Image 1: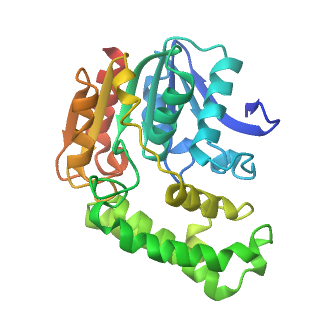
Image 2: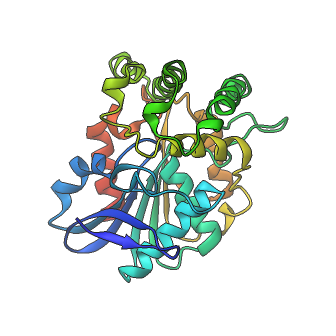
Length: 297
């Protein structure tokens, strides 16, 4: 399995499959890059897919953050990956946290290496204020953040400790919060039921490993404390951009995502009806068609 050595000496895993023009796909929170494989493998005869496990997840789970800002760290790691592989003319795509990483990369490093960009169910701003209520979880954000802040305060004294030493009650709270997160990611009842299984520790630990359990704490803190707002930088998006929107997304309300069209007038907006945040999983066939259309454009 290939690994990348980043600017801070960290070791990050990525998948490198296929041949042809390069495609980089960035996964969402608590996902491994391998979840892109069902979409990449059928197209590997035409494209070279680079699927990085972002720091803290998948094959890079044990790699700790060295910056206080999660998304700037991920953006720098992406820059290091493109530099190390000397990739140009990249077709870049990102879902949720992966889309945040792509926008942060655009803001910090520019898109000189990027040929076109696929943006999947992500608002242009994460935090809400009096003039913006379309961020993470929409109008429920403030209520949810109160609970997250309280849990973070209880977990913070255990940072750096082995997961098994956490009090059982705190472990249950951690997985219950993650279960709620997954529940918000889906619209279809079947997928929501699967998401709720995250509250069962022995099941969720197969998907979300715990050797570096504090990465989940770091992610939540970054979303709570850093005001991620890409509206000022999005008008500088010069490459073709396609935006995929889950019409019934609870994680990021569709109305907020549609404001991207005002910031990037040339962006193509594609709405997935009866679909929530996790578009590739709730609508895999249509997503596969849109991915092929994006790559072939």
